[in-house]
Image (cartoon, rainbow over all chains, first blue to last red; front, side, top):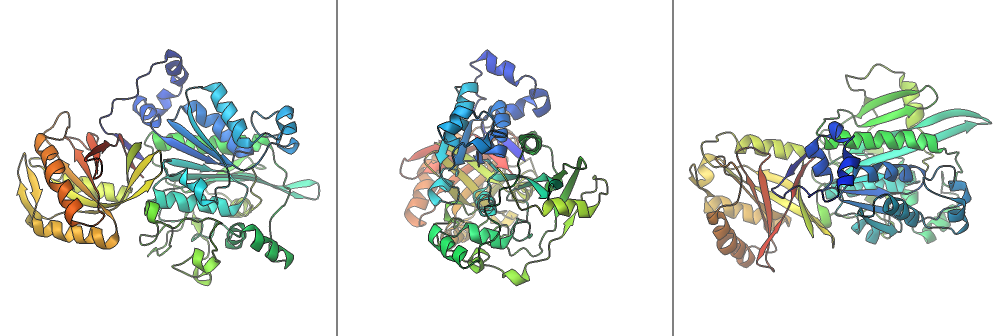
Length: 350
Length: 158
């Protein structure tokens, strides 16, 4: 990522405390990168366990603006992981957007924040993110994660997707970990054409409520409503990794991999790169689809009746490539089976 | 309203190679863009860049640069056909502090802007100026209705 300031004077530091607050990370980012970061608008989709950890870290980078969305309320089962949540919030069923706003405003009353109580799969919600430069995606379903990726590719904003998961086998932990993936308009891959996201889950998530009920009654809906175990500590690790990745990008570092998986049982980290299609005819990340088309690109949202073939207009499901990944040269050889165990986690949490 | 200009890395790198190949004279390039907008602002999303050859220039000196009408005509048609807007890019390779010149201002306000409004359907124009270094830049978006410019404080290259 390269950011060029075009003549506008850096924002005057009118508050000495703000300067002091930035002092310890400016050596890492660089003085000019902090100034440029202060011009960026950052979106966070999903304000649960991971999203609240992301906000906790992002607010301390002092971006120009935060745009935050969630359609859920604080409940008792959230209290083990949602940053800042209290028993009183759960009792009052506080909106997660209001909790996020409270957390940010308490920390920095001057921070520009826009909160949207809604679902990212709705068109009017996506419009609120049109001005974002970077979007962090941390929702609990693959459809909205995919919608975030499609939105980012179409609107020229980077997407950093953060997920965690824990799989239990009887009373033992079978697998635990998470992943961070990032993509931009220059990435030349996306989670749909790479097979990273399950297409049936995407299609299910895009159904409107009536159609979802019909398909659920017929037994077509799978993989939803699984009460997965979740912990704040794991969310914090992955959120921290994602924000660190963002800081490296803003400071101009090149990151030569597409994702990082954390195996929380072996305490190892694996970076990987996705296979690029050539030629790339993907509707979302290829040259001739919705890439960088902005307002003229069709949004992926649930208000439109969309079927899977329409979701993948320039190819068909059978012809999508088998998923293959490569490890960047600077990463030590690691057991691939361990990596796929983690990548196979579909119980995204928030 | 805030405005930002967004390039894909491959387009930006190609553009820089072209613009700074010969810094003894000004250079020019054109581009096509779409817009992502809401009530907070606009992101100018560069779709492609068009790099003129020597024969496509009408004037190319140390202090002046312009493109031939034939070349421009081809670009305008593509804008109309593909429903994209026009990016007008040039350099002041001699400039220490980069600013659009009085000539740039005159042409933008009285020639290019009005011509596009009258003759090229639904196509807007954004001007980009690079100075002695690629990191010295100015971006301004012509607003047909306002009859004036919006300024973009950032170029983001992904």
